[in-house]
Structures are given as structure tokens and as C-alpha cells.
Length: 374
Image 1 (cartoon, rainbow, N blue to C red):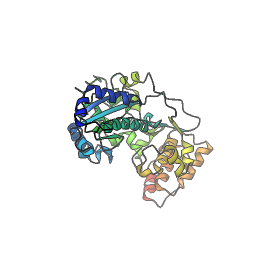
Image 2 (cartoon, one colour):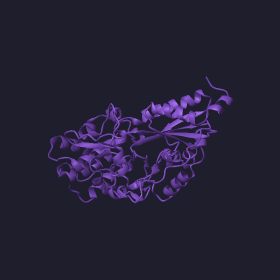
Image 3 (cartoon, rainbow, N blue to C red):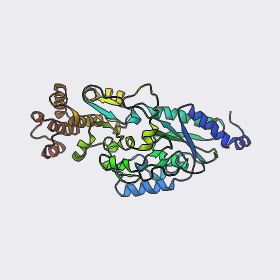
Image 4 (cartoon, rainbow, N blue to C red):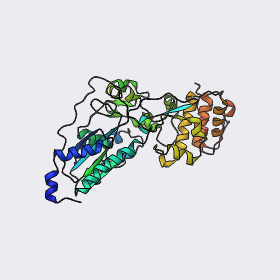
């Protein structure tokens, strides 16, 4: 039952925020704060600057419409505050299974965003029950969550552009509730905690962190493995066994390493994918098993493309199952998959399955490239 305006004015104070934080904590959201519902001016300027400099590399998400994704008023008219929550997902990396296996970024080992959304919606429902407008957002291009989290005092921006939570690091998924409730704002952002450390910059496998806090998406393996199209040849070897995402800049970050000492428990997780199983699955099977990943246009071909690159980097060309999978995809009706299968075949010395020519311009361009052996 909604309260009266007088009652609402009386309860919107620190104690009310504490009640919302406790509600979020019950859903696994361990860090929370409140940011103002004003335009995220710094983030807006940076999105536009980086897009103009070519650093977005076709990435959409919050780059699609910076004026919208940096304005809480565009999300909820009359918004006065943004309640921000962070849910941890640190987990111990298990050993790979037998056979060729692809590594998966930690944030998709389990469906953490569903749990985060549920927790944020419980906060939104409490606000609505008390008579306010409130909408929850997580992994949504309507809001730049990291900037809101920074303004809410949850963490600072690391040199790897991730939000680092004091005492815990960056293994967190972020989301927010935009509301018309005049919640008291967190007093100040967290100070920088990186100091002179630059391990993330030094250990990025493609030198994608071009300056502290700035990532060139065109060089970042996480984006390269998500974006549609042919993966440029000069990045394929650097992908290694990565099938989806890249955690390298977080795995070497001292605050994140220390914060991962107490990993969260998850009921189901998938840190590795048996690559031959993925390549052997039909479209429905790929989407049923790995559909929570971002696959452009919900198209399984991009997961298969990545799997072929992983085979080219780690598999044994003498394994009959590997050779059969590559042979099948060299003759696939999808030209993108043929390109990457041919690259994998040449890497593994399976030249006998590589055609001399092909009707596709893409494939002929691949065939014209110098052979890259492992």
C-alpha cells in the first residue's frame, strides 16, 4: 500500500537507504550506494571522445546513444536518485576437461545477471510500494553502470577501466535502480587505489589498454570474441584458448587477486567448454547451452567461429576428432566458418583438407594469406 506524500518525506533518509541496502544484501548484492540522478557528464564526454577517436570499433551498447545512456531522466522521468548495487562473482578457476577446451570469462560461468536483476527488482518493488517510480537496470544499454557505481562511492576506476571495489577488486556485476525517491546521495566517490601499479597494462595480451583507464575495443580480446565478422588474422594466435571473454587484466590486478581469496559459491558454473561438443551441436543446442552469452543477432555462428580459432591454437591435428571437425567446417556453407576452419587447418598441418580456391571473396582472401604454423 503506497504511503502518503508526508509519510514518504519522513522516511526517505539514511535509515530508509539502509533498509534498501539490507534488502539488496539478502539477494547477494554485497555493495550498494546512491548516486545523483543527474547527467553523467564525464561518461558522456568520454563515450563521445572515444567513439570519435575510433576506440569503439563498432561496439554499440552504451555507445549507441550516449545522450540516453548517461541521463537517468531518460530512463525514469523525474528521477531524483540512482540506487547502485554490486554483486560479486569471484570463483576459483577449475582445471580444464580432457580434450580441446575453451576458456570462458568468469562473469558468464553462471547467470549472475539474472540474480542481480532479481535483487535490484526487489529494491525497485519496495520503492514502488512506498509510492515512488522505480525501474531496475542491469547489463542494459540504458545506463552506464560503472559511472553510476563510481558516483555512488562503490569503487574507483582502475587502469584497466574496471570498477575496483575497496578490499574486493573487480569481480562484480553492476546494476542500478533509477527512482523518483529523493534518496540521500553517497557523499563522495572512492579515491584512486591503483597508485603506481600498471600490471594490467603490462599483461594485456594485445596491448589494448592504450592509456590508464582507456581501452581500445578493436584490440580487446573480449570485444574481438563478441563482435560479428571475420576475426582479423593478426589477433587469432593471441586468442589462445579463450572462447568467450578475457580476464587477464583482472587476474593480475593486486586488489582483485586479494579480493578473490573468498570466492562466492555458485550452484552451476561453466569455466570451460569442450570445443568439439560446441562445434558438433546444432543451432538450438548452442543457444540452449550458451545462449546467455552475447552472440550478435543471436547467431550461433560466432561461437563456432571462436571455437575454430581455439582449435587452431591448442588442438592436436593428429587427433581424428579434431581433423574431422575442421574438415567438416572447411566445407561448411557459411563462408565465415570456412575462413576460420581453413586457418585452423593450416595451423595444425592439415593442408590436405584446404581447398585451392573458393567462390567466396572472404575465403579466397584467407587462402591468399601466408600460412601460419603453430
